[in-house]
Image 1 (cartoon, rainbow, N blue to C red):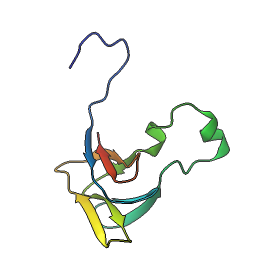
Image 2: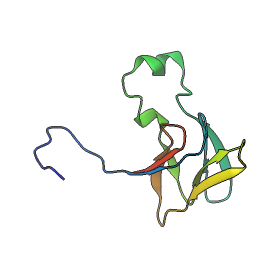
Image 3: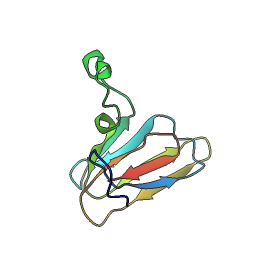
Image 4: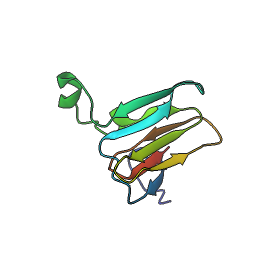
Length: 96
């Protein structure tokens, strides 16, 4: 990684697939319950802020997944430790 960056840089892992997941993805809440998440689901005040990436990241304790309901497919990632996760584009999962 280039050490000449002037701003903070976060390293992510991005998993890209051909799934048509739309704006919906799922994360576990506490290792027991799964929560449906919607990308860019924010209030008007939040939308006025320029920080659109971080507002779409959620805690991932044990799983994050996307689904393609038309083709009956699912992509699930099971991290080995707690991380932040998101799906910023259809068919993608990111972990930080």
